[in-house]
Length: 322
Image (cartoon, rainbow, N blue to C red; front, top):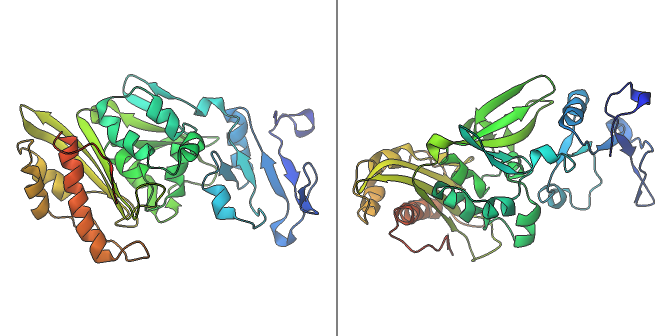
């Protein structure tokens, strides 16, 4: 859909819609009390999308796998900016300094793309995001913007030192992923901004990685706890370690104490003992229907050990625990 026209002076144009007799009224305004007119737009260029973002508040629609379940049977009250016409946001590419994952890249895109072994944890996490049907349409960037403490992709991106690229009509900026997700359902997105890519610096793609998820069952489950680990091994010893835990705090966290405890150790099964005594002060789990805070704390330490051993090549490749 082309959103520019002479009647708007070359500016992007959005459809306005409401509902009558349960059917959408495309192209006709619907006034909903103080809410005013709901707008729907599907731009075909980044310039169109960013211009629209600069003129109003929008709810961005990509895969829709979080938007539609959250909406349920309630009528839409937000303007909808559908970015599925933006081909520039799809795909995964290698540049001189980064791997660039477009904001519309899906989990299936990621799994199928040839990437260094350091991405193995992220690919394993991708296979845990809902069903295959969900993985085919859900965007990786949407997983970050949803900002759930149980977002499967976040720990694996944290151990890759991922950054988020944010664009508005007038500027572009980059934020470390740890600074982008601020809390449960809260991000650092400013008014008029959208995520356009996830960037993984090549310096963070050395070594091997693994992901372990703990759930109440094997498939289609929200995490009780999950861990991603990336190890760089030189001459049989751990020269660098990155470990992140999700579902055990308001946002997924890197474990600085565990990482420090692992560096310099032989890359063998003795790593598990070091993990048992390492501090995990970053974690602050809650209790809910999936598990108590105490259970999560104990489980996190166990699956950190499993993920680290798997990254070192000393554990089964099975990526989930039930």
